[in-house]
Length: 182
Image 1 (spheres, rainbow, N blue to C red):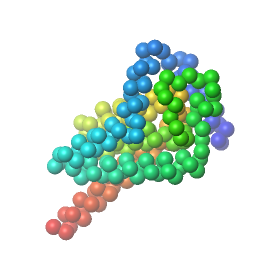
Image 2: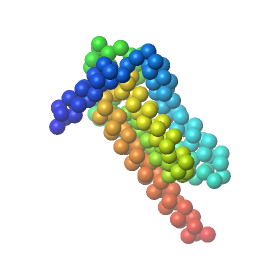
Image 3: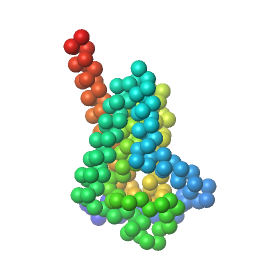
Image 4: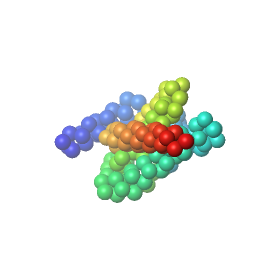
């Protein structure tokens, strides 16, 4: 099974490198990926939500979900799996961004992006399309830039959705308990 996943990972990585890389998209995806560095875009959005009385609880839960997701991925899963990044395994790949440190699985950019997108979409339907579009672009940028495999990005995205849904469930429980005590 792992060989099958790895063969899909390598096939998709090669397909993206062969058919999509060009001088127009390279700088665009470099910028997009940096929006996801350390979850910065999603953290800033969470902080902005904290500034709004209407969305303060959503911002708080979003920031907590992002922090827990980052701890889970970077301090627990990555050190256990120890998967090298594609550019380490395939030295012929040319990086157009600085080489990220750490392991490849799962993608922290994807995890943070989908955590943030799920929570933003739940908070306000009008935010769903731009949030998920940005999450998808950040996740895809990691493949385009050869710093993750497809399975890293998919797993990070799934985990992000789960952390987002857990954050929403906690918020709903919190609001329900707050209403009961009033």
